[in-house]
Length: 352
Image (cartoon, rainbow, N blue to C red; front, side, top):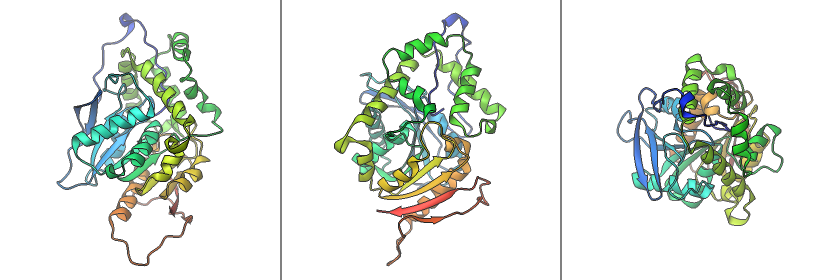
């Protein structure tokens, strides 16, 4: 999931047999070696030639699996690839042990350069949203559009439910928590993550829950997963402290690509109040707010997110009519989407 999964590493003898990384129907995996890291990339063979490329970046504790529902819905619209950041999913730790936002962004940039697929339609969730923001700011040549789902951008007043995520950055806390929760089962851990990440955890199907438990069991065997979590959390907190041109909000202002922002009203990790601030900082943005969604709207309401992206794609690729303008902060409420069955979403479009 795209949040604080808090696995311990019990003795090997009490663990189940390792489970292979799950590959959803229609997906494939490949390994990409870039300077300093080996990355696993999940992809869907394009439905037809000539589709524009899309690239997806998961959040803290997540993996490329988090994007499978959305990738399936965008099959035939874009040529999709999702990366496992170093130390997450099926990607081993980076060679230098650097889990900073800059290092994650560098890995994404090198992966895009290695594939020569850019410019791409870049997606990011949570920590992946911060990474994608930095990529779009420093390498505009690689990004055609930017879609951010609950991006982890600096907040002055952090929600109480997000405090444990920040505590991961404190040296020693990860080891302490590992000891205190050694007896937790994979099922208990998954339920905790779902309660934290979803606006309505009951939306997760029994099959989806079973898959999540299997993935948790697999991760509990990885000797480096907890370290990757703690160091990535530390890297995110460190990025929050940066000012000047390296500050994430300053970099958001530098993004040239048309941007779709998706925020959930029940998000316990990224404050819903940050939605309006993000809409002001990204110069060419549209904001979609989902009152009932949590932190991972692309998993909870993939149809609605897919519909919003298709609209962004249409507008980004359509020739602009001479004299056509969009008034800043124009609002429209499309109501329940007839073709998605999604929740009522409010959309605001701004132009810098």
